[in-house]
Image 1: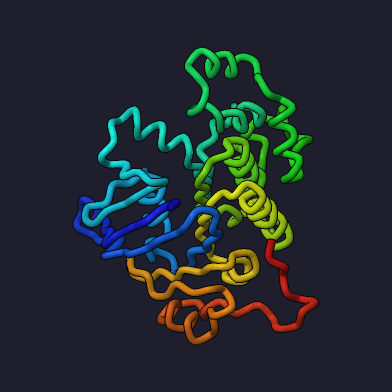
Image 2: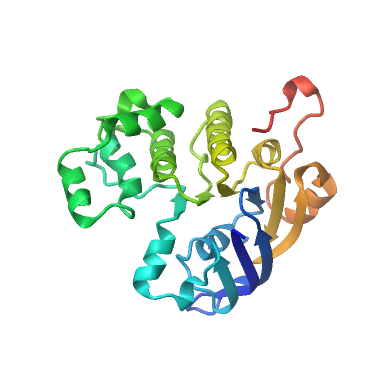
Length: 265
């Protein structure tokens, strides 16, 4: 079992319910996309899955463990098996890309090795290899402040891939990329997950990308799961209900023409 949420709820300090009674089971090796309108609770749901947020009700099981019944040290070991890709990666502006990528292993390295790595990158070849998958090998020694938003997102993804986690969570990982680059980047993420049996869960605004790359789609609205379906069963009716009353029209389904469809990885 990879992760299970049982009646999980999350209430913020000001009394706002971000999530209500979420029941969800994702088995090891699945690739799942979470979609829904802004403010639906997608990021909060990923926060529970990452053990970054503690549920105010219900339970969470991650990789066979209840993170909130573990000691702080054991919970940190559990988190080292979970890769988290942020929409805006928290990368220090003056940090070099190679150091940012290698930081993916800090949770697995001892203190001494981690400190040495800050002074002298210990695995430049490994960092270069994972950056090459994302067309960033030439930026190995660039500083993060020299990168565009889309490049920073790819560095954040490279760090998570270098970590080689058991569970990989991505919160709007391609929001700053153009459609072609976003498609390529999701293809890299999916290929990595499939080849290593990694569980991949990503929140996405672009419905067409979610349907193209992920076999299972979860629709979230107002802190609750509206539907949980195979991608082939997600139709316009479901999307209209999910995005109802949004200022923008609901995202269209991908075109039916085979030559225009994005292949799944």
